[in-house]
Length: 356
Image 1 (cartoon, helix red, strand yellow):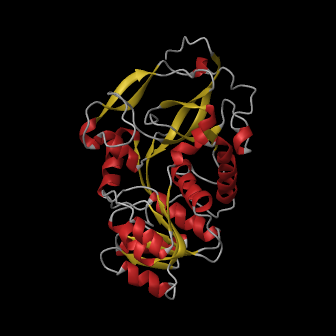
Image 2: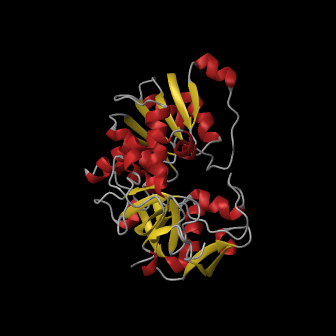
């Protein structure tokens, strides 16, 4: 939408007419699919804000978007990127003077100049438009690189552990991919909740990162016997809660070491295999399998979002949670970030920085 949009209430007089944006022009691996193009800067419509992007955290869904394998398939060409930190530079009609995200998040209202985090497909660009309800004040204690990885991973982990699994202090929490972005978030939040955390990682090098995040026990996939390791660590009790963004073999192993009345939270299928839930086994062992699609909450239960955001902000400012950044790349090398993420060798987040 060009800058002539009559509904823009404030800020666009300081914004350039054009910007650079990475766009998927043909489906494939990120290095082949992405093109750096010059496009018009969009103007925020009613209820939206325009953000000058400071950093974008690479997410596995970005890789899937490039491949055309994500559950959302935008028409070509489109801009990927789903998680951002930046500065509000313009407000759409109805945003100025409102509480912005205050009503749902308990945080400060939106204003031009506010530093915010947010999530929406299409933020891998120099400027991005997002619904005002989808951004919130970035915790002051976090750098831009750290804050860019807060929205998706930590809200996913928070809803998975607290809303879906009702994790209790003293329970055993098993986290698969515990050195990845969402896995590290689950480890940190589990420790903060008083759980005893067992992390599963893909290599010995990643084990130290999971331990530093607070995992009491760390098992290396492909080296350690996961089922035996969990049973030994828990004295035969098993995992009360399993946080599984991997699926496939990880899920199958979890069903063999889940505790009586345990809860397995299915977060994703980064391992590439979508498993079938064994209903008979669920019945015989008396455990639950819970799905978590965090993206539904802002639309279906927006009333629950505020508590999560306020708590994550409190924990971040208190130093209890902090996104781990594997490395950063400049905006011009964004495809490298997605390629590194797809290769599975990263720890925490890979962040694309735009600078000042």
